[in-house]
Length: 413
Image (cartoon, rainbow, N blue to C red; front, side, top):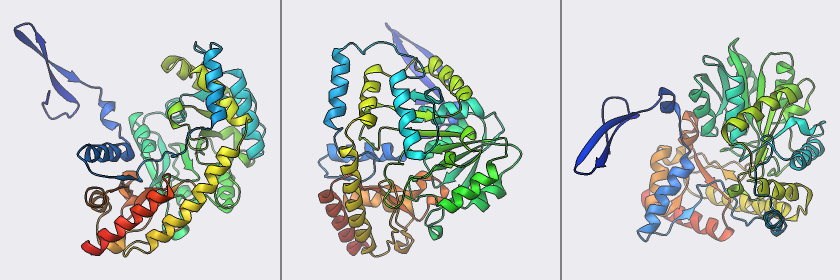
């Protein structure tokens, strides 16, 4: 297979047919050129290649809890399989799980939620994708955080909208600057994406800024997609959602799921909470794309929400200890300065003191120090000068990684 022409999405494929060959071009739709990727998966592939050649790599690049899914959740899924939960279910999700999510969201966020306002999806990403498909037209403005989860910008561009980044600055402890958001709002703005606790910074929106933004948006004809996937991984205070404020519940799509809180990344189980008329449209997109979320995983989701919470609580306590270790260790490495993250499981140190660009330093740490991490630029241009380390790995491996980075710095200035 070889690329031809000026369009990177056009490929010439050779197909054998007995003694001869037929040549034809694969010409993709232009929108495919707008899709981005996730740096974490790209770095993981590179790290696995090094491991295949005998290198030992410590993985601090991937945002995945290293804990097993709790036994009671696994047992619930096993029972569901034995009981025949292996067939189609409703596109919007099973009534039992939708009710469990509604109750959990209402209890934790102090808002009234009906099960008709809940949509269950295979992972949380479909809520992001479907919300943008349903609400954003080509040419609309969509505001999103930078540095931020790279799929935000990817999906905005995919639908032909204009991505409008707003900054998350270290000097503000990576809190949102509502003044900047308001200055960037235009008549074409149809959606704002929020993420708190944040990936990659670990920052958490302050109550003052959430209140200020809610007051400014309560009368505007636009929506907020609030990515709260890390809402149970917060180290100081209580999680706060913009949906809790007057006038904002009907304007907010709340995105959450089971991957981070319950170490269920491979189960692919997420949900969105939104006004019921919008939920019907998102369910229609589910019908046209996935049909439904796997039924036995939904039974496991009910158990996750209603069952013993000790595994999630213990995981949070372990992450808190790891946070202390990795932040202290990074701050002892020359050229690194790391604020303590308020949520999620990411350290986001400033590395401008090393004199190296983020991508070059991340590459060197992988290939020379044996530590996989992400360049801050994997999360947008404003991530330059930073690295992201996931502390979703054991204390032993975190300490070992810190030692290897420090040793590398001693030899490379």
